[in-house]
Image 1 (cartoon, helix red, strand yellow):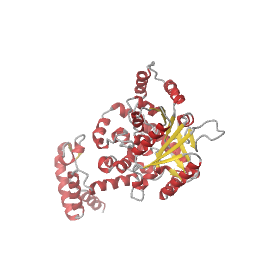
Image 2: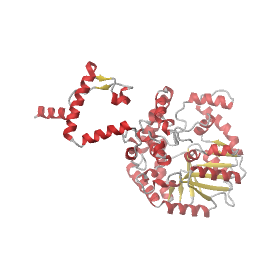
Image 3: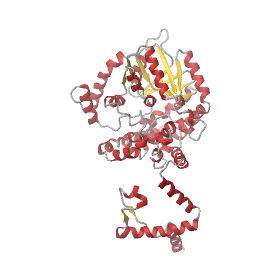
Image 4: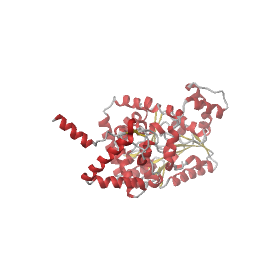
Amino acid sequence: MQVQSMQFKARAGQKLADQRLQQNLTKLSTKFVSARASAMTAIDFPATRAALKARRDRALENLDVWLETFEREATRRGVTVLFAETTQEAARLVADIAKQHDVKKVIKTKSMVSEEMRLNAVLGEMGVQSIETDLGEYILQINDNEPPSHIIAPVVHKDKEEIADLFAKTHGRARLTEITQMTREAREVLRPHFMSADMGVTGGNFVIAETGSVAVVTNEGNEGMCTVMPRVHVAVTGIEKVLPTLEDLATAMRLLPRSATGQTTSNYFSLLTGPRAAGDQDGPEHMYVVLVDGGRTGLIGGEFQEMLRCIRCGACMNHCPVYQKVGGHAYGWVYPGPMGSVLTPSYVGLDKALDLPQAATLCGECNSVCPVGIPLSDLLRKLREKQMERHLRPWRERAGLAVWGFLALRPGLYNLVTKLAVRVLERAGGQRRAISRLPLAQGWTATRDMPAPVGRTFRELYAAQRSHIG
């Protein structure tokens, strides 16, 4: 997926004007937010979150050790473990595996890392057909390879009517509008691909060091078809997804489905440990795990290491007031919402995602729902500081903040200037007591009026109130 994060402002404006999208995005609050709140009542969320945070930190603090342990145990069980420093190298490794096994068709489960890798495009360039089997991802693929707008619900930006039109056009069948009928139609279309694919590609929600296993979580069961039916299975995931033990995995699974979709448990959960062994009735003949760096090690030991705790549940974007209004495509890369506003600058460069650290109100809602306690608003603030340090923000913004900083360090002067400013603004509001145009605040007054102040500063009003009480 190409990085287009520099276009956030323009894209956000377009999404805000899209009334159909605005209606579709209400599903975030009516479904995911309320479902999560209900699911969390069954557990002690603060205690469970603290436990998972500690377990994820334990893994990250000795990441090299646990990765080596995973490699050793997975290899002992017949898995070929490969490491890729870049997403381009990871895509090349998967392409080499496909070429080695004379693969003509690949079936895939939803994987955000494969989006980082642009895997479908790479396989297509070498003549290998790649079929998305997650229903949401399949819908996007047949819609001109549209990128996902959410990491859990990739097609949340579309409604049933849009999908009905797309199915009728693509499948050449009568237009259906009942959800059960539409999902049956999708199964009928995908079934031949499941039966004829040479290779299955999945993500990996976690990899378990002590057993050399890959954990894959879905709600549709397609991960089973992608790992059991083809003769080759390739799992691609980030290096930060390693967990030391199965006990760590159990803790993670208490929070992942609850945070993501409001379910106490996912419909399907696969723990994949090696290829088919002698006497097994199913499973792949060959199994590979490609562990991708793609900028992740650059966060180790730094002030953004906490971001690597992320388990990709999507709770932060579901609750984010910005994401709820603009959707995922505005962010311009694989990861949207608050998590994406930290990950994208960290992975592809702060200079390629200038608007994303600003694409947040810093309300802290993302912090409160994160199942691993990532202080997202604090990390976004740090990115804003780095932008100022590197002079990546517009000069007017930097100059304005420099003036404010100068005044804030001089209370007497600050008091004098603010007294003058509120009186000027009061007169600018006129009888309407509203300012419709303000040269230094066009971002506000271009779309709404700014209420005029009463002509006295807060300090003046506070002093008057105290004098009245006294």
